[in-house]
Image (cartoon, rainbow, N blue to C red; front, side):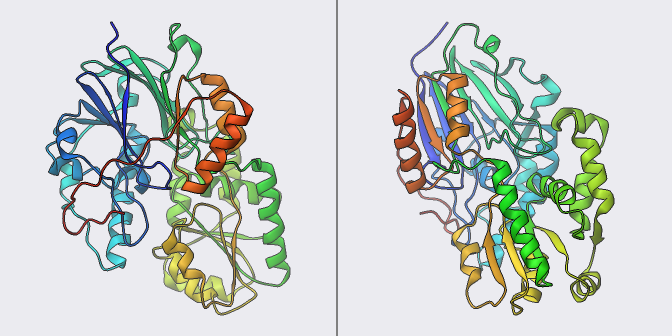
Length: 434
């Protein structure tokens, strides 16, 4: 039996990159999709509405990156006592990303607006222990869900939701072009003849049309240019996802160029060679390619080894933290910044804080995207496959969202909603918001 239409409240993530947070409601049933922070000005949080937080039926977390999870403990302060559904792999990654968020905030002289112990007070449920991918399950009264891998990082998922009989789709952070990670989409059999009434779709790259192969060609050209002038290249990457893709691509495309990697990254990637994890999250050919790449890497651990590496012949160095806002990426940056032969190459989103680091250095600062989100052709493919009645474009700034919406409307009769952020609500005194 179906109730009224789906209502959407945006508490973060529309016309901005970061603090993903969306509330869906049908009749008396409501769910929250993600509850993240934003790495700008020392940390921004979603605009939570306390009385609505208290009434949430259930919360879902698409993956473990800080812009999707860093504000989850704030739900406790507003009276939420229910469950948070996520995958086992996302649950495993949470402590590391929680520490990274706390370190980022404190590096700007702030403090997170909750206790570290609050993470232990949250109630977790594991999607992949209750249901296989693309299988409906009941998550709360009036709420059914099915999930599948989104190709963004291990553990990351899309969600198909049924609220009181009404169907919505949340892409999470989505990429169908990862070298190693699997990505699926809901098949028509899951809809049982119904239409998706609302789709919340990752559109982080706006109207950009470049495909992954072209982006990789541009990256390799830059790396060869720096290598030719006998410079090191620092590639800051997240702990999971994009970094291992790049390790494989560069080892295959540039076999003559030596690669070095922080040991924490190598251990994380090697763990995914376990048969159960590989079967769940990796493409069929990925384990063999990843194992071969790891075998070529020089691993680095500790300051003494880093200094020895930097004194040696030119290398491509992969270090944790894609925005280079924490150690050891910052230490590498300080060591390289005064020599014009070297380069720091960012392959993902740069916050205002990360962009501000580019001033007053002699080394080359480059931004060459490796796709872990969606641009115009990817969003268009998703909309054509799902045929939602209405769509909200998320995860892109104001200009990128406007340009993409204009292009999409010229290519089809898509109903694109443009919801405003929720009215500003007071947060704890040491939490910041726009």
